[in-house]
Image (spheres, rainbow, N blue to C red):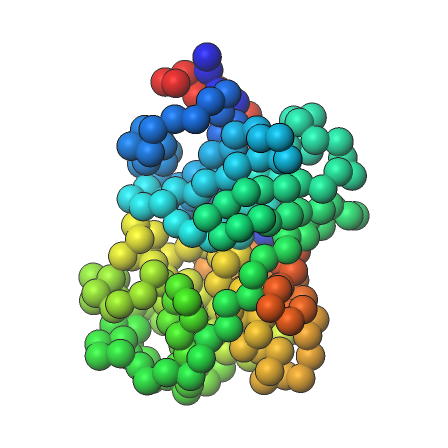
Length: 264
């Protein structure tokens, strides 16, 4: 049977901004190789596959080349899909069983809030080749369970970075976050995210990176409630609340396409 397949822009309230994710609701479990082929065919930074369970939905995320353990924007998109398509009542909690455990989402006043695990970055030395690949010098470096976090001097430097993607893909990490304190009013910090080793040269807006950015900037600024702007070409806004070993990530979502996947 054809499967519903939507494209949704997450962490934005405008079409063609934020981070696009494909969301596919399956009627039955499909082989991993098939899921990866669909993600490669769609060629977005993430494709989310949902499957109804007794207590919510299973949720898996695939880049064009690999399955990942945690993805924020495709979870925002998945929750938005379930409410918009009538698979959940508007005020119902979305519950997702994932490779990172149970994740939940709620919507209020247009903001979708995720409850995610915090992944704080511990201080680290920059690995060989990192600064050369970025073409800049790190102010501080940290390493989370997934990514390297590189703090730069200011927002202008973050925006100006033009990395050597081939060299960056050889750095041992899922992805590389660059960040600085924001100069733009309304934001506490800015960031960008590169993951060429995972098939995503630059990700437009990365929820999972904010699981590390939140604790990093909460410690630096002395506040647990923060607003981040991911300064990619498309751009996007993520509200972050640090709550012990969890973070709450909030953003908007906009449906761009509604269709069906025929090759099921």
